[in-house]
Amino acid sequence: AQDNEAVLKTFMKQEAPMSQVYSKVWREGVRVDAKAIKRQRDLERQQYADVLVEMKEHIKALLPFPEEPHEKLTKYDSWYSKGWDKYRKQIVDWATSYNEEDPFEQVMQVRSPVSKAWAEEKDLKESKGVNLGHYMPQRVLFYDLCGLSYIQAAGKTQSDGDARDKMLERWSKKESEIEPVRFNAVKGVMDCTKKLAAIDNTIKLFLTNYLNLIDPETQRMYPTLSSQLDTRRMALSNPNLSQLPKGKLSEYVRGFFLADSEDHLVVSADWSSVELLIVAEYSGDPEMTRVFSVLPYEDMHSLTASYCMGMSLEDFKNHPDKKNLRRDVGKSSNFGYIYSGALGTTAGVMGWSSEEHWEKVDRFRKLYSGMEAWRIGIIEEAKRNGVVELP
Image 1 (tube, rainbow, N blue to C red):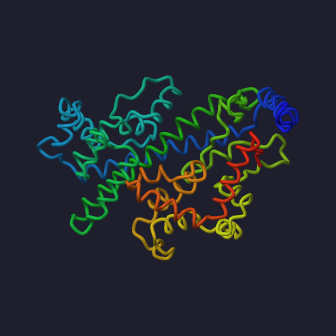
Image 2 (cartoon, one colour):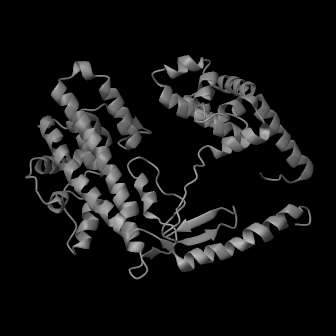
Image 3 (spheres, helix red, strand yellow):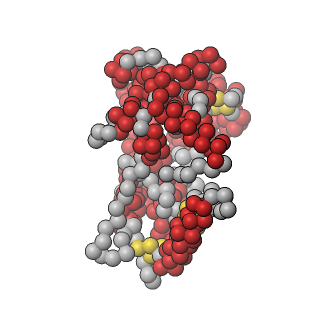
């Protein structure tokens, strides 16, 4: 504080008073709509049952399994070589079983976070059915039954979300070569897998958890709010209100939280790309200012990707892999460069040589020359004064 009066001022006027806010939130709680949470939970359970019925039909269209076990799974997955017939039987038995009219009975045919929470609610034992969310049955489904292209990384079989996206992308390119019924059945299995995973996560992370955290007398939650001393970042738990989902499949979670008064509203501010906006504002970079000076904003990630790849923006927009390039080159470069002064992360993802990397860095610096001058000025200020005043 002796070297920087702003530090003491910030602590006394901003950080110290926040302890009172934290304690008030913990003491008085957060008002929530418990009925809405229960309605959504019931809806998700019904949707889960419906997806299971749909998935059965897709699997039955693909049966029977090949006579021989999958060659690469046998080679690289020891659990498969020891019990491939067991996992096949689990899948066949479930897919050919009778569909129940009661959604609870339908969901209890499989083992999942949805069936587990529902069984516990009824004081029943967990289902012993096939676990469609576990990587072992999934790999038997994807590789063994569906015949999707085998994906491996670091000597290990892959079946996570990213791998499934690649499988489906490769499968889609074969449409003209494959009989329509089989082609659509495989796509159906992958689509149902994605839907089940989304519902599993929503039920496990939010709906069941939230209902358990609501005080039955006050109908409020009492989250723990604190400040991390090493970073000064705010942290929340039970539940973590700073990390509510915003994806299309679970964005409704934000609507569960109510203002303290009936005549008040909760307003959500969109801080998307706020770091880039702050840099644009303080650096006055002409290109960044142009991108962010219109509503809706222009796409800075696509602009950066096209420039670094040596393409016109129009050509980039027509590129078949523009979505991945926008993420792996554009977004990665924009954030990575401002924090590090290079494009090392992007180079690693794209497999650029050292020469290619620094060539892309030069292109990036030319595109955002105003930002680069501001960045270097901030570094020099820190060296000269020993401190940097934050925005």
